[in-house]
Image 1 (tube, rainbow, N blue to C red):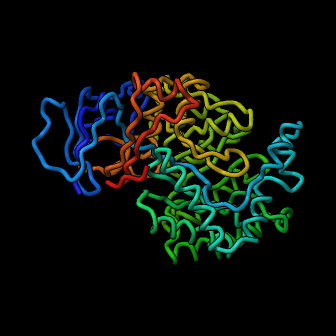
Image 2 (cartoon, helix red, strand yellow):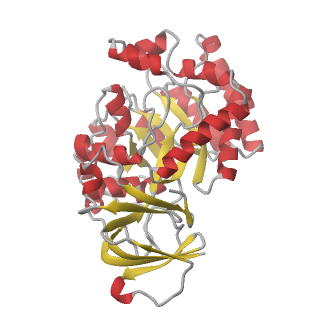
Image 3 (tube, rainbow, N blue to C red):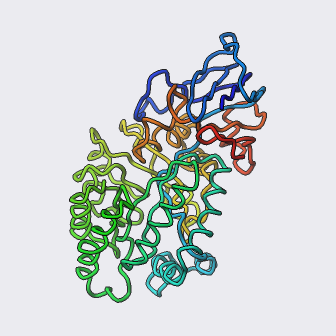
Length: 412
C-alpha cells in the first residue's frame, strides 16, 4: 500500500543519511523540512521532501497534514509492560510517608508484583499486557523494549518472555525482549544470594537462550539489590549465551554500576538519577547509551537525571518511560518528553532526539527506526493542527496526536 502525506507544516527528524545516535551539542539540532511531503510504500519510508518537489503519483491513500507536524514515532527503550495487577496501594503508602525502600523491605515492591504474576496464567498475563501495548501504540510509540523480572522463578520468567514473544508476533510494533531475572532476590533466597544467581546462570539463561526468548540481559545493580560483583557474574553468564548487556544503575545510589556497564560494553545504562563526575567521565568515548527515565523521578519524587551536565560533557542521552506497576504506571512517551523539558531543562529538540534516534540506538534498532530516512520503517506520528513542535512539551497535559502509523499501518 502506498500512502502520500502532503502539506506537512514541518517534517521533523529528517536524515538524508542514517546516523546511529546524536551526542552532546549535536542533540540541539533537529533537522526538519517545512511545507513537506512524505511517501510511504508498504512498511517503509519511500520518499520525502519539500511540497514544491512532491511527485505526481496515485497512492491508495492521501493524508492532508495542513498545519500539522509529522515526526517519527517514539522509541521506548526501557519498559516492564508485561506484569500482573497493580500496586496502587503502594502509591497511597508513599503518599502517607513510606519510601520505596521501606515498602520493598516489608514485602512490597518487586516481590509484590512477582507474587501477582506467579498467580497469573500465561493467557491472562498476555491479555493484560496487550491492552497496555495497544495503549502506548496509540500514544505514538512505534518501538518498545520489554523486560522480564517479575517472575523470579524459572517457569515464571520463561512465562513472561513467552508473553513478550507472543506480543511481538501479534503486533506490528518492533519489540525487543530483555531477561531481567536479576530484578530482586526472591524471599527464599534472601540470605542465599549465590543460590539465586546460580539458578539464573545454570537454569534460566540456558533455557532462555535455547528458546530464543531474549536478546538482552539486564541487572538491577543497586544497594539492597545486586552488588557489583553479583551483577558481573550475571552479565558474564548472559554474554556466554549471546545476551547483550543492559543495566539498571544509579537510581538511588552510585555504587560503580555505570563503570560496570561500560566495562561489559552494555548497550545502555538506565535510570542515572544519581550521577557523579566519575560516572560521566567513564561514559565518554564509550558505545554505551545513557538512558533517563523522568516519569519515574516524577512518580517517586526522586532526583532527575542531570541531563544538562551530561550533554555539556558531550554525551548522548535517550529517554524512556520505565512503564511498570510500581514506580511508573504510565507508558506515555509524550509526557516523558515534556517532563524532560520541564524538569531536566532539555530543549524540545534535545528531548525529541533523545526519544527517537537515541531511543532507537538504546534498543539496537537505529538502522531501521528513529528518523525520517528513506528505507527505514514507516513509523509516523501526525499531530493535530498546532503552532509548532514546541507545543508538544509545552501543552504537556493535552493529547496532540491525531494519527499514528506503524510499519505502514494506520493504528490510531
